[in-house]
Length: 255
Length: 254
Image (cartoon, rainbow over all chains, first blue to last red; front, side, top):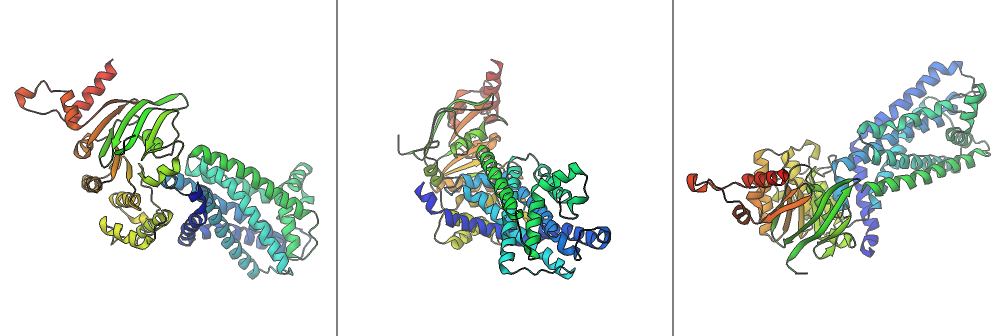
């Protein structure tokens, strides 16, 4: 046990190296992940945008946070897919018969997810800049935005881990992200919730995406974040803890 | 326990939900020998391998590998073994060389690059070393898979149906590798459904049928168990296949 603990960081380094290769060699998945949100952004800004009353003169600024969340939600389906193939192809079995720290296997995938989603987020922000996105936020606000997005990615990654470890087929492993991708549409991400019928509005205002979008929007436009940021953090940390608990349970049952 | 015993299994039982997969299994494997566990699909071969390689915990009975109990000292067991499972456990996105270096690092070897070069040469993969594994043929994948298992020179190697799905040429290549391993002093635990494979390779053969070991011995011992009535007329030794089918058929008829 001592020896296993001592090697945790060395094992982690090897797993991270593996992850980096997977990311750099599957740029096509990152492109796939970024194209859909960029297309949505173009559609909403240049097609629907004129008809949407968001109460802001720069609609790109308004919808960017929601688009980033959609990108992350679709990005994590690849995490589920990667985990699923690792389990399926037997490489996990090989690792499990070696005297290495078992938790590094899952953490390797989690780091991969964080890195690849960070790349997609940066690409989308660059496209948004071309489309007219402007922010008056300072460095601290940007760091806070990065922190919220990282926490959101981390929470969803553990949800994806449950799907990847327990799925019976590739389709099952990646299907999980569809409902999550849909959540931003029933939130304040694209239109203000005031225009929605009461039941939908109640859902929209009390689901995690609205508070996360609200917090990021406020940070980027240098407005006071109010309660949104605390509600957003509570949602992310809550989902993270619950998903982590169940992912670990599935993992232990599986191996 | 004797020092020349590599694996010893006593009263091993394992069930999944309500299915009794292994029913009171006993056997021992001597160091430096090739032991073949022979059986049809669903006989419990893979379950036995999973218990011995610490992937599954036994329900009852004991299994010791290299002197350590698989259930209570899994880390000690893991230091002495390696597993080549039924599906080639290789990373398709990485190259053959990168796969070997990765495993060498996970075994904390001091010179992963040299270990990788040596194994690539030994397994005839030097030319393909820097190609992604997704471009490899089935035989090349299997060779890389076995090469990965040899990183760090484990004392005991588990091969779960190593030639299933290989063409005859690749199969003979794998047989050659296994024989070389045993000649070098490595203990090889092999499962197979190919009777010829057990006949060609194994020092000792155990036949696993419906979760029980029904016969265990050397090939000549097994042959003595079943003298062919035809031998004096056509001068034909029973093949292992005859023995297997006769014994299995008899048990089923009971």
